[in-house]
Amino acid sequence: MSNHFNRRNFIGLVSAGAAGMHFTAAAPTLSVSAGVDGKPALLGGEPVRTKPFPGWPVVEDNDRANQKAVLESKHWNRGSHVDQFEEAWASRLGAKYAVATSSGTSALVASLAALEVGPGDEVIVPPYTFVATINVVLLHHALPVFVDTDRSTFQIDPGKIASAITENTRCVMPVHLGGNVANMDEILKVARAKNVPVLEDACQSHLAEWRGQKVGTVGDLGCFSFQASKNLNSGEGGAATSNNGDLIARVASFQNAGRGYEIDENGKLIGDRSSGFVYTRNGDNRRLTEFQGALLLSQLDRLEEQAKIREQNAEYLTSLLKEVPGIRPAEMYEGCTRNAYHLYMFRFDPEGFAGMSRKRFLEAMKAEGVACSSGYGRLNKEPFLETTYKSRGFRRIYTEKEIQLLLERNECPENDRLCDEAVWLIQTQLLGPRSDMDEIAAAVRKIQKHAASLV
Ligand SMILES: Cc1ncc(COP(=O)(O)O)c(C=O)c1O
Image (cartoon, rainbow, N blue to C red; front, side, top):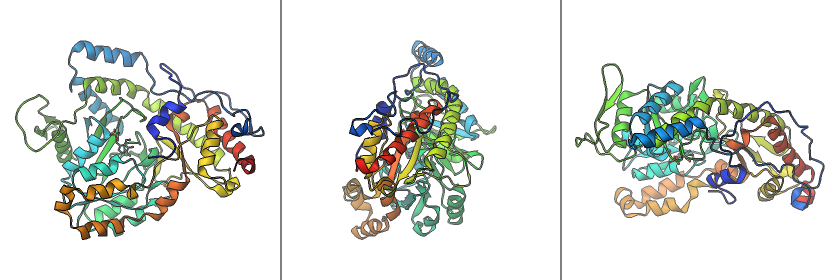
């Protein structure tokens, strides 16, 4: 992933262990120039910031009560808490159906199974994403076809999808990266024209919206992750969402060993949630536990409030950072009506910083008390892809020529550039008072002001 920090370790680096912490966005605002004039911390000066950022996860009494209830019920595997969470999540998103799974990866694997993606198929994916987006395609022995990134938004470039679709394309899988939203108008237009289903990887975008509709409900299927770093967290966990009963019944069946599920006359998803021995298709065990279901229910109580704080802080931070030459905050498409800000992403241009490398910028930011990440590497060029294509199973499905052609189609020059420019803050850094944003911006401005002495 990143040369510097990966997102999951990075959470520990920036956060205080803040059990029971309450957040407020209403704290007094510091002057933007606070600490900008002093010597850079990397050269021995005082850091702009010494406090840790808010901790994650937040643990309150409702979490404790729910966990105790599950423990004492002695019903620890999938049961009423998971059922309640599925209902709550579907209703929060305005989706007809949600099926909980053991992880975001599981939700994606089950969704691709529901779409019958398999050997010989191609799936359109972005290269700027977490590896799970690609892994799940390979797990089904299908081929990921990378479509270049729109650097301005960090999302899949919607204008380049049509030319990547072939007669083998079985699914288009946009990722709503970092809480921001991929251009769903364009993606749906292209995919519908070619009659290809759209699976939204919304693993990083809880409550984000496209034209007022929650992501994960815009395409045919949507997938969410509740892994520890995510804006909604049960340690591990996931969910698939859909308005299509047939598809969601297949997802439900897959996550429960292939047991039968169907939509009843009232439009409700019903099925065999017992450990009965009747199967309708090949499946897997991707079930969520009651502890996780209960944790998601209690954590869900705070999701909207936290989302609002992130949004307000991120918008304010953008207003500060967009004025700094060499810093370009990720833009949103006009149809993005809500950004979930799982990450706060911007591009760093050395030209605005006396030629300073991004690596040096990250070191200087860390010294100022604002740790940032360099984000993803070039996923489409990861050696593990070729290793997979050369594996026994893949060689039985695809000829050397087919793989060679695929590798030639996988050039993503814009994404290559983005991987050298990107800088991320994470969602917990947006959860404190507005004055934290002033300090983040002050750290950036201080480094810029003293760039010549830092390069
Ligand atoms: C874009 C994206 N897709 C898929 C996943 C997989 O989710 P999980 O880690 O819950 O399996 C993640 C999680 O990090 C993700 O960020």
